[in-house]
Amino acid sequence: MRLELGKINIKDVQFGEETKVVDGVLFVNKEEMLAEIGGDEHVKSIDIDIARPGESVRITPVKDVVEPRVKVEGNGGIFPGIISKVDTVGEGRTHALKGVAVVTTGKIVGFQEGIVDMVGEGAKYTPFSKTNNVVITAEPVDGLKQHQHEKAVRMIGFKAATYLGKVAKDLTPDEVSVYETKPLLEQLAEYPELPKVGYVYMLQTQGLLHDTYVYGVDAKQIVPTILYPTEIMDGAVVSGNCVSACDKNPSYVHLNNGVIEELYAKHGTELNFVGVIITNENVYLADKERSSNWTSKLCRYLGLDAVIVSQEGFGNPDTDLIMNCKKIENQGVKTVIVTDEYAGRDGSSQSLADADPKADAVVTGGNANGVVRLPKLDKVIGHLEVVNVIAGGSDGALKEDGTIEVEVQAITGATNETGFNYLSAKGF
Image (cartoon, rainbow, N blue to C red):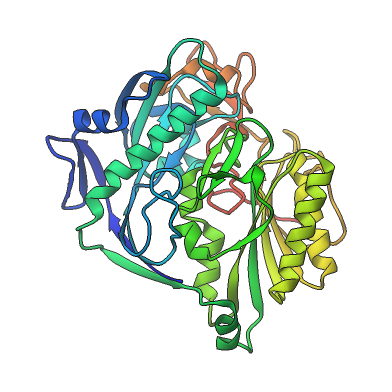
């Protein structure tokens, strides 16, 4: 599949009479957008704010972050199986508004939701302090079940990103990047002298509110399978989970997966990027065994020399990560695992809940238990009191002077395990 990704660079977002892009500024008709994304019987109110880099603004609890995109040429539409029909995506042309993100917030759904600060110490840890954020505050009707609440807000986020993305359809991109992966036999024949490398993409699927969707299907229901990398770049995988904010993959990260980008950057020169194997993370041992068996089998079936394996979440998924690593290595395929660490506030605890000698090539996104003190900011979008109960926070996290003391895991994207973050660590 060959995908052209047209990038329209946005330097500012403002409210205006018409939703359009002029000279790198995205103007948003607030009333029109509210009408477009509203109407869900589970939501009693919706509001839209703008939060720009450097502004004294805090957004919490953050649920999802989505990049506005639109399908210009080729099969299907953006977010297949969610917003568009389930046509296979990943080829043709897609336009993206770069530098813009839709951020959803409102009353807390589950305790694993996060903080995005647009300035100050917290801004150093989240990549979404650098985007111009269109923030949707969606408040549920009273007595709504958690899973209904999560779905309602999730769909509003995708509707908002779709609404904004449409303005990019007829724009001339500032840059066009081309990504191509050919059918397997053609791909292998094209660079026979280069090592064949794949990517095992672990998706968070561990129980209620820990959902990831593949063409609209809850990935709990899948067995590991092969996707073209361009399908993922074109919206085939989206988030619906409330895993800890620091290492969840918001939908924005699925669309902009750094591992895929880097493998394509080296494709044809240092390696032959063969494709992506998606697999789920499971609760029960039998399911973990099944998925890791299939994942390792597919690595061998593709004839890979090496794979990168990235995790989403921590704790229980560490077992899935190490199972995948061991079994893939046992197939004669070299692995590099990408994870983060929960090594305690002083960094002296065991970093992962599972380990194995075969996991000897590790990239870390940093220690999520590190403590950070966030300053009081002028404006809060959402509900500030949740910092006392979200993962990484604790009773008393919100101080009397308005400052906040939390672990890094409370900050959205701080230790992201695809590398979409600013932290890492070195071993000595």
